[in-house]
Amino acid sequence: MIEHIQHLLQITDLDQATIMQLLARADAIIHADQHDREQQQLLAGKTLANLFFEPSTRTRVSFELAAKRLGAEVINFDEQQSSMRKDEALLDTMLSLQAMQCQFFVLRHSENSIVTTVARQMPPGIAVINAGDGTHAHPSQALLDLFTIQQHKPDFSALTVAIIGDIKHSRVANSQIAALQMVGVKAIRLIGPAELLPEPYADPRIQFAHDIRHGLQDADVVIILRVQKERIAAEQQPDLDAYYHDYGLTRDRLACASADAIVMHPGPVNRGIEIDASICDGPQSVIRQQVRNGVAVRMAILLLLAKNMDAYS
Ligand code: CP
Image (cartoon, rainbow, N blue to C red; front, side):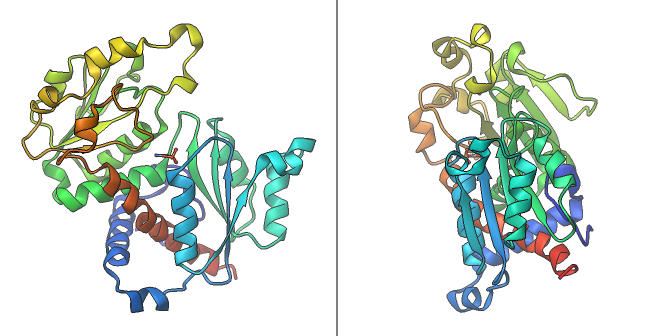
C-alpha cells in the first residue's frame, strides 16, 4: 500500500491496496453519523483551490463540498477575472495561491500533460489533483465509479464491464480501464464504431466490439460515455442520429446484458444520443448514485493526500 502520495494525477499513481483502502474510507464516510461528521474536521486550517479551465458541474462542486465537509476553505478560481488574462502563467498563478496558503489544487485543463507538468513543479506538502486533463485521465471519476460498482457488485473478479461510446477521446474511459484492470475484473468490453475506439490493449481481458448487442452479452456493468464533440475535428464529427441508431442504449439493447446489470454514466448525459431517457431514469440506472458518491470518494482522496502534507507541516 502507498503510504505517502503527494499528487493524484492518474490511477496508476495508486496501487490496488490503496484503491481498496480509499473505497473503504469512502464507505465509512457515507455511513458516519452526524456526530462523527462534526468530529471529523480533519482538514480544518487547510485551503483547496479549484482551478477549472474547462466546464464542470459534478467534479468542481463535489470537490468543493468534500473539502468543506472536512473543514477546509475553498477558493473557486475564476480565470476570466484573474491575472492569467494578463498572460500570467498557470504555474505562477498556482505558486501565488500557494503563497496564500492553498495546499490542495484541483485542476482541470484541455491539455493532456499540463496538470502533470505543473504538479512536478510544486513544492513538497502541496497536492495537485487531476480533475480531467484532455484525453488523458480523470482519476477521481474512475474511483467513484469503482465505489459505485462495489456497492452493487462487491466481487470485482466476477465482473464483465461493458463501456460503450467515444472511448478514444475519453479521459474517463482511460482511468476507468486502468482502475478496472487494477482491481482485477474478469473482462472489459469496449464497444463503439472503429473511429471512436482506442488502440488495442495488450491485456487479453480487454476486448473490442462494434456490435452493441454482441458486446453487451451478459455484461454486469454497462458504462455509457457521451461523444466528446469538443475533442473531435469538425470534419470528423459523427452524425448523432446515426450514432443513436447504432450505439444508443435502448431498452431492447440493455436486455442483452445480465438481468441485474447496472447502468452508469459519468455525465454530462445527452439523452436520446448515447442513452434513452427511460434508461437514464430507470431502475437499473445508478447515475445519480455515482454523483452522490463523488463527494465521499473525493473526501477520501483529500484525506489520503493530506497524510503526505502533514509529514511536511
Ligand atoms: N463526470 C464529470 O467529470 O462531470 P463534470 O464535467 O460535470 O465535472
